[in-house]
Length: 434
Image 1 (cartoon, rainbow, N blue to C red):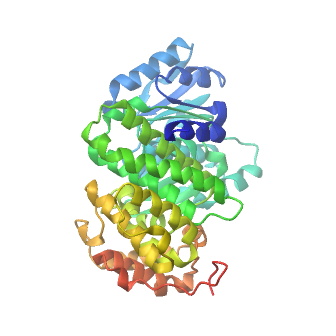
Image 2 (image 1 turned 180 degrees about the vertical axis):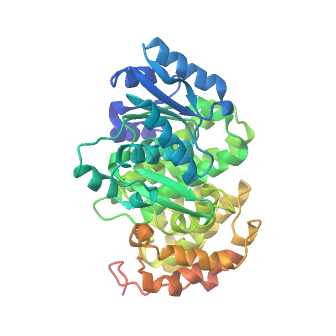
């Protein structure tokens, strides 16, 4: 079975009839929205892809639906700044729609997820900070009669998979720090993604999105439990090879649907991965790089260094990941002959070679504006209880007391690209930390 066919099978397994993906899928927006009533709040930065948004509006109108407020409301800026979340909350409160249709990339969708929470529960807890962490929205909903407004996410970028997941990233621009709402309740009720729309993505965004999808699969795979291992392995194998084989081609031929479809399927599989397991080290550090680089680049930059740190505990995973990079000429060593840290360093070098091949940064020093204070900020953020899930998701898990001793060297290694600075924990024969 070819990679794309396997990817479609996995996505059907994941979302069933609640997700319309592929080509010419926009009519599904109307049929999904019609189930909830007459009034639809449409949120989108329409100037970015006006014909596409207009097509969605026409689909809604043909379905007998009305635009709440009679217009399209502006979505969030990149990284979903918290003030945009409060602004979108006001649209929901003022217009009381039967459902929300958000059209955009990850930041647009994440902001609407968070705004929907605030609009629904703001009378109980009005500050977005209250909801950062895992399961807090569900806990508060259980103590009330309120329910979130039904939400339909129309994705426009092959990247974060926000249209399919329980995550909402929100940024405090003053602190330059991103935090997460993680809750099953905020998963969009339905989703639509016409992969052809991603032809509008410029090369920089195409690279960033692919690296984000890759990071989702790799990080979840690294931390996979025994009962999840086989499922995560297949998701990762398919998604990773689709990205490695097609990203460079999509940059050169942005209008080629075959390449765009491959990246769309791969990043959607990244969303599947993070609904089965959780991301860890690289994502945690990326939240402190928000004012220096894009999210996908930050994850792509950091994952090789965490790979070296995790290596003694994840040999099975590294054999799979390394095999794919080696197949595409990015690793010269014989992967089956390597173990432990040497295996980790070989796979990490393959990741770096891939990032270099598409022009992505591979060291913190490559980021304009970087200084050593950022490392201290990232270490401090890693001790924030609201981000603790990223520490516990690691295959070699850390606690607040061990962050400086082990994560510190990882970040200093990432500054210059020197793997030799990374310290490994002792790992026992079962893969645990001794």
